[in-house]
Length: 405
Ligand code: FAD
Image (cartoon, rainbow, N blue to C red; front, side):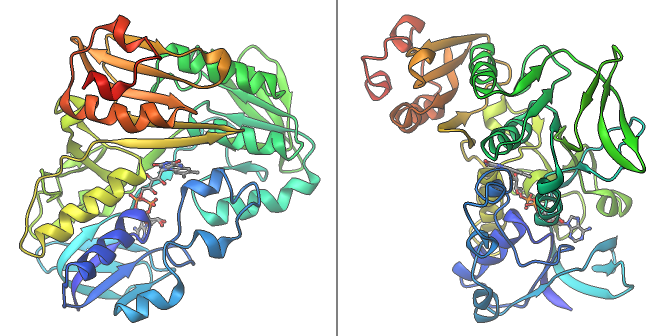
């Protein structure tokens, strides 16, 4: 029995525990995760950790001693399979029942799998956990060629690192451009050109038929037109499925995620949900119910819950931000560009330092900044204030954005 049980020991779960102690919460806290490791940062998995620029110890969210020191009970290798909301109890895969006063559900999501033949062959990898990446790295020495399926951030980052490690990479994207769901066309075209310049073979508007095999191992990817792309390693980066079945089975409202209110409460008594799995109305998405898959959202929702549980309730209203590193390009985004009706280019992509400013109904709603830290920092106020700025002014890179607020 714990006062607070947190299920999922990733970014959101760990931050909830940390924020509760920072806010002097004195009750018992259990942080329960199904991975073997203590909480660690996930973004480096497709960046510095994959590139072997950072050892695992350096991506731990806190040193091992921290958790004992803060009297946070961390249970690793423990998968919660059932929730009894009435009895205030969760049950692990091993059959252990753990009682709670308050439950915080912070389980993120599992990588979406291909539905085609060969999706589970040896050599087919996801990039979600340390274990995924360790398996992939162990196979690299015997890998001649890599096929990446999915031109989202994770697929592109993995392609960049593997290219740097000297592996020939082919990237297959079903839509007509990479990053199609999250960015405007000029950004997509810029990244496609960068990857091609580094030798990545990008295939757009291309459907996968199946993974081909020899002796139980992947040897390549067959496309819908019959072409076979050779590759002993196939990396699948096609999104996640929120890990919410136990909570929905317990009666929580939701579907693609657990539905939460402005303080991250689910429809079940004393149960909150945060992070990638939380379906929330986001002010920066015009109030639409969305899941946000970012460290920002995980941390800020964790703080919202910690405040609600320590008598300082406050609605979630944080401005979304995100980053992605590919080659020497540092992309930083602020706001949410989904639903934009205009996009203004600021600076020249040929200089490899520029921004794309997104507008809806004449108001700035988001920026994507490539090697343009100043725009990122100064553009934030425009997004928060929903500033009305004329497109030709935004396009004038000689005028700092802070002068447009
Ligand atoms: P997670 O961090 O996924 O944590 C959930 C944990 O719960 C996992 O350990 C999971 O195994 C565990 N779990 C699931 N079900 C159960 C269960 N039933 N019982 C017990 N435990 C369970 N975001 C950025 O902002 N910037 C980036 O550059 C960026 N890069 C990324 C790169 C990669 C490769 C990945 C995978 C993600 C990246 N993200 C990035 C997204 C970011 O990491 C996530 O948004 C963030 O980790 C979400 O935190 P979370 O706690 O909701 O989920």
